[in-house]
Image (cartoon, rainbow, N blue to C red; front, side):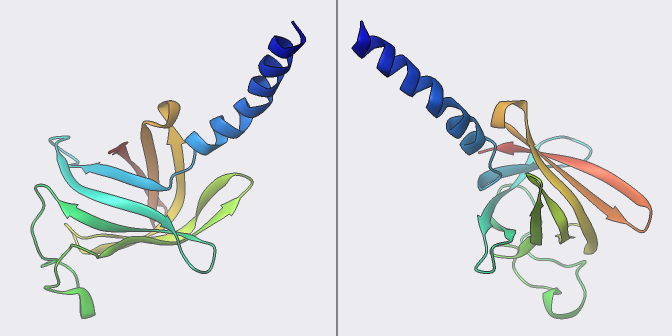
Length: 141
């Protein structure tokens, strides 16, 4: 009985750690087309050397292979390996206050927040240009 109670208590104590591990945005996510909702790319979210989060495209499913609408050094570059989020900071458990790039339009934006939802199955990425914000939903790969 004591052994069972000990194992049960240990399991309950570990549950918050498991829940927080599932809520990490680190990992691979499928991005979706804004209109058709079909998968476009696979993006890997990772911890950068400076402790911030970043994301880059690791697989192209149905997006143009190069960033034709980008400007400057990214114009015409392959989207594989291209950063799409960077400098995301953790404030009270919410990642945000970083920068982003949408290769299909070449637009850069302020990454306001990146939040894991739906039990770890979805990533809500909210980006803003000036006062206009929109949220894209990515699916765990």
